[in-house]
Image (tube, rainbow over all chains, first blue to last red; front, side, top):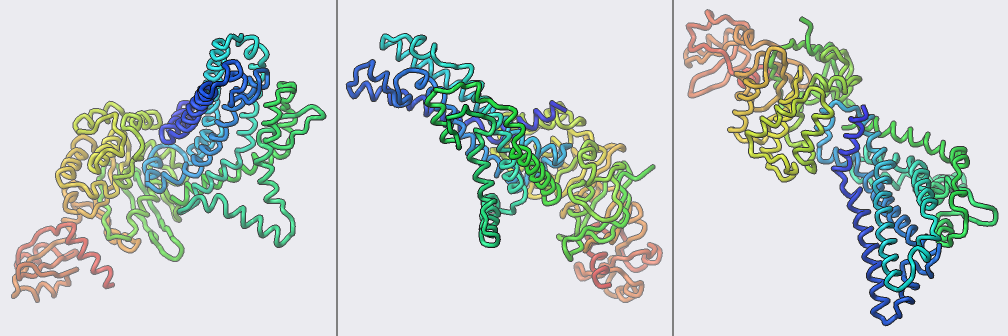
Length: 306
Length: 286
């Protein structure tokens, strides 16, 4: 049973190489960008120690803040890439096989449509984030090593300036927690992509967007309210903070504020992890019910419409 | 012996169109059945219902299972080629074999490799780099390495050259088929499979117009090539169809004994293609 699901996951990754190519490419660009900005700073005649202190990448003198940026920037960039990759994967996952007719082959194998659709959801909300996370961690390690080397050459102590003050483990725990909670939080969105890709005769994109735009417009005309668009807006802006709780006095009302807070580095990292808040959020359970409905629709379409 | 495929009053509608219209038949184990019909006759829809790819009305049982509800279980015992060129283009041959090996309990990867070794298909090639003929060979190699009770081939050799088609059918008969297995084939090249079949079904307009074993076809149907002066006497015996060939009239008869025809000209068993045309023109006139 596990061997089957594992194989179905592998199958998805064989087909959709962008799941690892895209984050790898962006990680390469980030590292390259770091090197370029550092070399440029030196070439412009900046004294070495100042260059070190004003690396564009970190944007601040070395401290917890700078170190957090070294960890945070790959995390934020690559998760943005993850969003794009998962979107493209979701709209293609049940559409391409119908378009090239290979569905006729896949359905000649003893695999139920439910197993297939679930393997595609797991690919998008578990496998893709884990692949991205592995690449995020590798990028962070490479950047930390590079910055440490730079500091060493400049005569500073990496341990004192960077590695010592930086709460690595806590930050990585935080990243993993955000990743886990936002993946679950985004499951209904992915399930909607899958439903559209199973349903659409052509242009999946139209089906992804148009129903919600029309629904929102109808609502605003007929009922003069904006609940549909508000729900969608909340789904996206609360994703990363759905499992976090912040001390009084710090206002984090969307993901951008979270990014700023992470960069500022002055809050108790692990204290923000709030499983109870996450698990008692009606938005989570409502989202999971919607996920189940969309997935059932995708399974239905694959069974009846191929 | 219970039938491997049993259909009772099977219908499938698409809106107002009846693609399959109240069809009943049985297929016993160990048979090779040719399902023959014009385009749009309902062949593919009927096969899809048999394979559990579409739902239908009526009672349909394949290997004792309801095909649509138990498709996964059914696929352990049934393999099919719905259309030769449908292997996923992005996959590498060796990974495709690994996939089928893990997912299909009755697949022998050794048999598939042995069969591929006789072709020019490299194991490390992506499917998209293979020619159309190679993709077909690959698909058929995989399908024939599955030890299935029922093999369904829907136009398995469409678009392939005659050398490949001949060797495919030879391989199918010699290496694959045995009395435990059952094969259903549809093709437009009826002549090529005529000698292979044990049974034949004609389907037209969603209905089965003929369902016979090849032996009973030989007993029931006869073809007479009559000289012009005998033609009127032959017409008196109410032939199914008449056509002319080299200035002679060729008649197809149903249920007329060979003795009755003996004096009128050359008597033989009709080819399936001719019988098909005769049977259909009669059905459509009725």
